[in-house]
Length: 272
Image 1 (tube, rainbow, N blue to C red):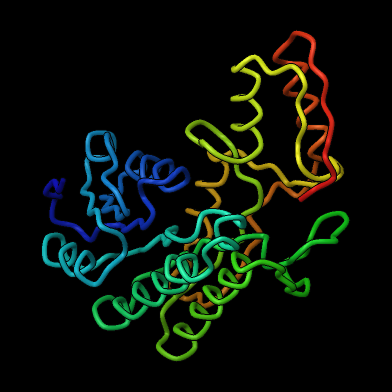
Image 2: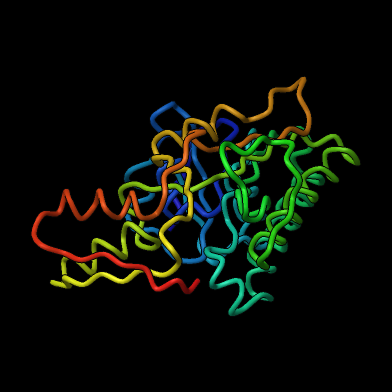
């Protein structure tokens, strides 16, 4: 479904029907932006809550050209489309590559030709750092991904660096950590609450429980993503998008169980 926008350069959000993308689109609309969203599937409520337009079918040349024809070139692009999880990337690495790297190449090359001055934020992940870190991870830490998901996010970053260096496209990268909040229907908190709601009392989670996560609420994440949008004078830059403080999986799971109430037993299988 497409809704006509007022005459002004719009702000584009890819992955706009996803968890972070929908929160970001609503935030941008509240800030006065004319939001054009792109997603693989229709996003119910997007147009009514943002006053913008939505193009389904994924990030394709056809969708980008349709948005350009309908609303003109973007002033800014937040590219959030990409692979969803480490597990899915391991199960289908080619699909993850196409969703992450392929979509990024499509967006950046489209902008090179039609909106060379548009500022771009690319959503990356802490997965580019790999595992084995203790304490806060500095943005200049060595990159050592261990999954297709992490490798593909690293490729996304390098594409941004390349288009910035070669064509002058202003690009920022936001490496996101463990994002949570309303509307997220996957990962630890969603899975754990779903099992509790179903009446499980013996909760067995994967891993050891000692795994550390830097949790960051989606409301803070969208403000961060908005803030790192490169200004005219800025070029390629990378930012860590975490809170800077980690908590173990066992600690977070224990807090959920305590808040839920009742008698539950929590254990870890030791398997990843």
